[in-house]
Amino acid sequence: MSSNYSITRDQIISLALRKLGVLEIGDTPDANSVANAAMTLNLLIKQFNTDGLKLWKISELILPLTASKTMYTLGGASSDLMYDSLAPTVAITDKPLKVIQGFYRNTQSTPNIDTPVLLVSKQEYNVLGSKFSTGTANTIFYDPRKLNGLLYVYLTPDTNSQTNLQMHLVAQMPINDISSATEVPDFPNEWMNCLVWNLADQLAMEYGVPMNARQEIAQRATLYKSQMVDWDVEASSTFFSPDFRSTSPNSYGR
Image (tube, rainbow, N blue to C red; front, side, top):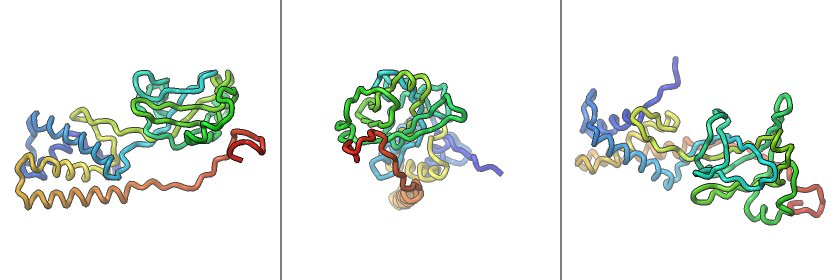
């Protein structure tokens, strides 16, 4: 038995057009219909972001550290090098939406040893001591900004950090646009009915679908979307991160 069934962009489009009754089973939509539906599908996915749906993927990024460098640009044309841990030779240029966890990995130990770093807010980062004290990074602050994100690392990495350590970031990454006919949307399979019916709902008026049919399509689209809101909830546990910033009893955070 297989559980890796997938569906492409153009299959989603064909299914949506069949729900509208404008495409017969076995027929193929013309190029203009596909182009219009593809644009509508990408706009629909972006609209979902404003409807409370969690449209991002969780990735573990690898950020090589550079000695004496405190700030790293994440995403965009000027991005510092970073990689997906699942494909560590392929550079990532998408801007992380949010960093939710960080740790550094000692690549010289056998096996590798991971040590958590403290993720702080802008206010907490601002009141840290000398930003250019060097050593092993133990605190990070991420500013997502508009075009590219900025990651601030404290302590400033030293030569040992550059040689022996990797910074790993667990981050929310944007869902990529669906740009080709055979591309499989970057969604779990459980999402596919939601995409099909909501695309049909978006296209119904353009194709002059009768009001009673449009209402049924809209009801199904709403149902599947609400089911995704309830289903796509990430399990989590309480995690207490030690404060590595200082050992002084009078230091910030004590």
